[in-house]
Picture 1: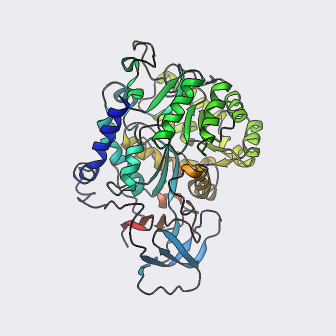
Picture 2: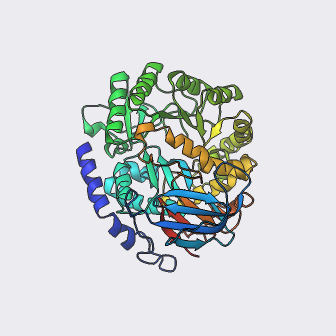
Picture 3: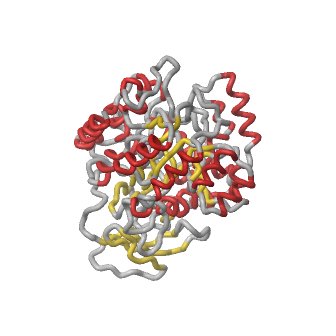
Length: 482
């Protein structure tokens, strides 16, 4: 069955460009056929581009570098200076006093889980989600996200298609199928489904058949799932370390996987030079994960400041989608009426979660983590940008989470990092030329990079962000409205 999945993905990526231009858009007033051209992320002549007259947010410092110039050679930044740069024969772009900033990074997304859970589990196959993923990937890039860490799903073929220039999208860091215990956050079988058996595909959920997740129990099965993902090209491993809100049969307070299972997964991942990320919410789960050497903690809303301090001391990262504790979550039209009071209460109780992470010097990375219909995912991503400025009280903090801190986290993949020629998330000499040219100053106004206080009441159809005038990925320009 896994071989069939790979064949399906191979077929999909070979026709991705046709899908991208012929079927991804049906709003002719917004999109023109061939509007975006795919380019190989690893090829191309080392041409030079000189961007003059810009104010640079470098990803690390709150003060912009004023009236600066940047020379790009091939796919990397060659020179950054406030003095004029002479580059004969370079393509010249006048920034006109706009803000030049690193391309944004989404530290937790699911490009292949691109419909509501019900249809994915019961009605869709690998072709359906692959078709949708072409649209998801392109819209990520056109929203200014030049890198995405995919935290569960069969995104390997999509990554290869983007890297080879067949379709348009950001750099992808795939985890492969997330790894869950039976009864865990990745066990999406209905009550009426057959019991789980590792020997019979007929007993697998659709999530497992399509490679979105793996349900395992005991060290041997955990190791097999980990090694399979690494074999297929995972840049990091994702496990389910506790319960969740989007799954039906694992209460959010539960701790999942034994210490033996977690430590075995971590050691097998270390053998490949990379790290383990874990879905988790509670102190008990996080501390068990830390005991085994897990490095990134996805969500984590209910942890104490004591646990935050331990994460910071041990060099870990927290990757939360802050909309999960937003009062606006209760406005979700799919939210059961009896759940609304609980959502509102949790939002109030953990309102200082983001502020406490910063106070305790935890490294925090931006995450959209919205699964489901891609229209909803895009609206949630833009809402998340705005909402984080409210919960962290600082545009600068949020911009760091989107750029330099996220880039540091991605680099933990070590030899499994597919993009090792330069740094991500910063503007400095030798870094990748993943850049945005923005009308306005995102340090003062998050709306110029798409942030909005509208979510479920936002326009359901995707439209470009007018204030992002230029998008460059790997030295190639994908959008230029100057």
